[in-house]
Image (tube, rainbow, N blue to C red; front, side, top):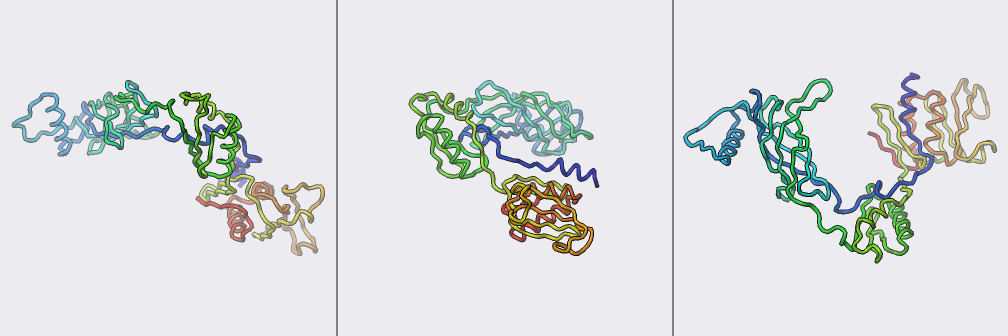
Length: 355
């Protein structure tokens, strides 16, 4: 019980206040992103662990040999267990330039048992627009999942060679658009205010909770990189929604201190929870902090013995509840049930998400 409680305490994160973050960590520049590439190819040189008699693998081998000048006229069918058909995937980063290299993930799609020892033959990689952006080739390296090797999936480190440049003349733009990772009106307004203060004018405008447009100031004309470098460094305190996330399987509770609890009383087993107006508390207790008491007999409050009781000021947050209940030895499962009941009663001022 103590072990589980300690693990639970470690897993609860309580934020006393929202820390400032750089704009580059909470927003991204529209259009500056990676692109997914996919392709089809053949892995050769396998030690009898390939596809064998699969029709599409045979057709692919025929097509490859024909391009290499090998005439297969008169050869109706052939079977090779040293070849495997594979699907290739890769990530093409923003501003990728011709000549740069990428890692390629190789996945068997046929009946091959292993790609170990194989070599990927030159294969094109295409984006969603069906244009070829890279060509992949090289020795396949087999990975491991820790215990048993998965030999039908491998990698070709630096196996793809980029064939075309990406991106237009970025520095010549007159307008740049930021998109927040977590849309929020308050955060968006704070970012606009901070950017305009830094640039010395009204150059940033919020279009909605997640979109901010920045017009390049005269002193940053044709200097898009310098402008965005300046904007990215600006510190902003992002606002967060009052939210409690509960994982019932692991007993994990994650929350922020913005989640407030209204006056409420809950009885759970031999535990009684009361959130009362501040004036009913001792003057020595500050507003929003938990006051913990254990009572045996108190006719004015409870008339049964050996009860566990704790009181919270009005305006207390979920963090106060968690800390107080952990002092009383409440199990994670009971804590989750109590929070669910508080939310059901309408006393938890925030969202409760259960995973």
